[in-house]
Amino acid sequence: MERIGRIESDREAAGSSRRFSLDQCATVESNRITCITKPHPHSPLEHITHVGGVNSQGQSWYYARQRVADMIDSGRHVFRVKAGRGEIPVSTYVRNGSKFIRTIADGTARDHILSLDQCPLRGP
Image (cartoon, rainbow, N blue to C red; front, side, top):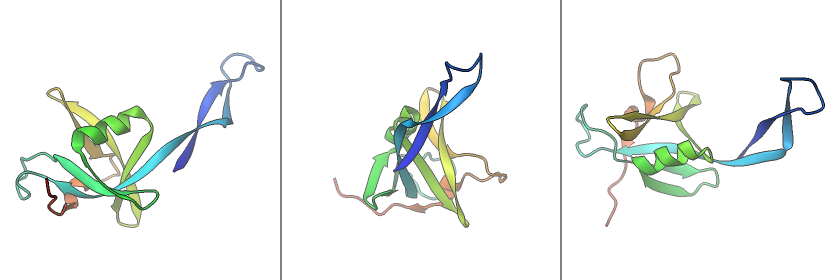
């Protein structure tokens, strides 16, 4: 888990100064996406339906794309994709009323989620 502090108004100082308060840190669950599921894996036109990975405790998970997008938007979960020696954060966006996920731009045109392997088949 990661600890992310909140920025608060400093009531003792004048106007717009801010103070980083470690006392009121929120806990954020960190997750790494390691695989994706698309209905037709080799089609560039298909969207991701599910993603899988591991959390900060090493536990595996497999969630629908919409659930991951909602978890990111809640502010209580962070998702990343391994790329080279680092990790790229995942963000959400809305297209035609549906939520999708993608990696945050890192200076390349590629969405690193789409380069992940297909998740193993899961039973009902």
